Image (cartoon, rainbow, N blue to C red; front, top):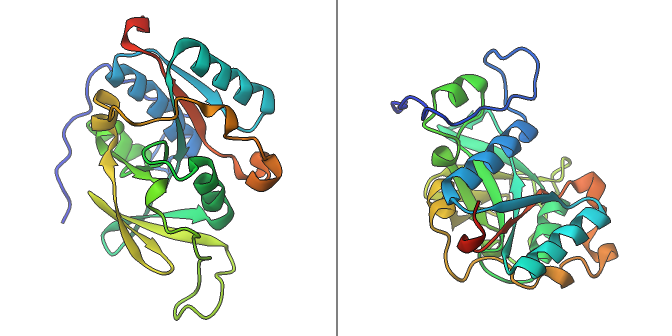
Length: 233
């Protein structure tokens, strides 16, 4: 059953990185740009965003986190316009998932999948705001070690090498060996993040790049440094 969507909040910008702005699939880059913008607006704190694929940029972000006494989060943004059985389904490459688990270092509330329940430009234009319709999955909740995705019956590894994540807020189901995990609303998280969330000493996150893998290919999301409230603009 379709749910009624409220008009989008006035003043929340929409960044579009595609061509024809008709009813088409939103890209991960479009989601990422708008996620970063709305997150900082709702948090009412200064947030420094940086990429993770280049060594110098990562080091700059970690140095700033240490210098200003902020906390670091890593967000892996996903995008999907696939609805299966009434649920939005996301694809998550197995190697990328393993790398995100490695980055989390077994620590809660630091590394998240970003799962928007919005997949097309039409849905985006009618939404209340991206973060209100986006959910965060803490990578810490994933089984360790994470088994490879398999086809039905679990006898062969799926050729695509991708897990499936079905969104049913406030839970998700992660396949192939199905298990359920909790998700939290991104707007609530941005407005009032848990006090014990985030890395406070990120310098060791990428100490073994051979173990983490090829960042350029896997594109491990974005880093966000939340500065203390007294540092807000």
